[in-house]
Structure formats: structure tokens, C-alpha cells
Image 1 (cartoon, protein in one colour):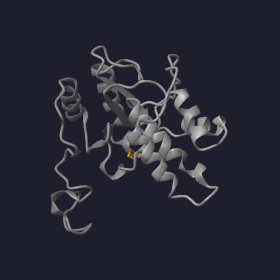
Image 2 (spheres, rainbow, N blue to C red):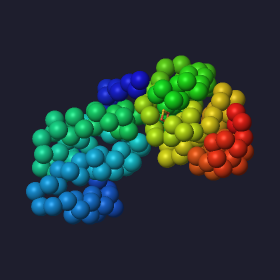
Image 3 (cartoon, protein in one colour):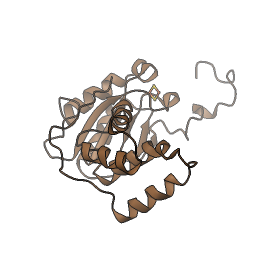
Image 4 (tube, rainbow, N blue to C red):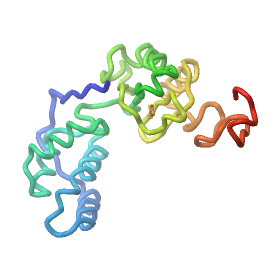
Length: 202
Ligand code: FES
């Protein structure tokens, strides 16, 4: 289960950069007149990207004003969805899926790797300031379970050793290869299997 903590340390102000302001204004035009508040999720995501991958409370207030909606409604959205971080995360933000398909295929071994190599507690930034990790709900790659997400990339078909290698690479500022770690392209069957019956127990 993912734990959402709102940072005790908050910046005093927030506003979109001129580039992000243009992007936000463009997104709003996708919605019919009077329905601009529907852009709240996209704008929160822009704010998160701009602010080192987390959303401070002032950004929620800024977006509420921007979309002319009550602050509490923006707060509700930001605190509901696990893709929004409400406190600082590491430069490399590792999300470990522990929902059932990943869990039964060894997700908690990956959690142990994160505890050993990043930080004992989830949500805590590692001593070298580079990484943090979080247990999250299904990330939609169940067929390649177990998996982790690091920033924008998915790492799939993992086991303890493979996960250790990946985390070692990010700790050393190297970029691990995203995708399946059992050599699959996306979610194709292994062994070039074309039907359910042509390789027994594949
Ligand atoms: S259960 Fe882990 S990606 Fe869906």
C-alpha cells in the first residue's frame, strides 16, 4: 500500500514558468467553456514536473486560483492519486508495485532490495540524496510482473538479483535499460510461443 505524506517543509510560493504557463493555457482550451476545472489533473502533473517531482501546497493553491475552483477540490485530487508526490522524492524515484500479480511473483523481494540499497523506510531519501522508493498499487504492467517504475521508465520481469543490478546502476548515476528483463518485447510470450499449446509448461 502506498503511503502519502505531505511534506512538513513547504516553499512559500509557486508559479508556472513561462513555458509551463503556455502549456497549461493550451491544455485548458481542450475543455468546453465552463469546464476548465477538468484540467486539474494535467496541471497538477505539470506542477509536479516543474517542482522536482513533487507538489507543494502552494502549487495546489496556485492551480485552484488558475482554474477558479476551491483549493480543497485541488487538494482532494492531489491527495487521492498515487502518481502525485506530496513530499520531496529522490532524483531517481523508484515505485515498486505490490498489487496481487506482482506480489505473488515476488514483489516483496524487490521491496527488500529497495530497503537494503536505498533506505529502510519508504518515502525517505537515500543518504547520498539520489534515490527514494515507494510501494504503489498496480502500474498496469501486470503481465510482466513483478515490476518497478523509475521516473518515467518501467523495468519488468524482475527478480531480486535483477532489481539489485538496476538499483546499483541508478545509485552510480548510470542509466539502466528499461523494459523486460527476461528478453521479451513488451508482453510477448517467451520462447517464441505462438499458441497456448505448442510448448508444454512454457
Ligand atoms: S499488479 Fe503490478 S503492474 Fe499490475
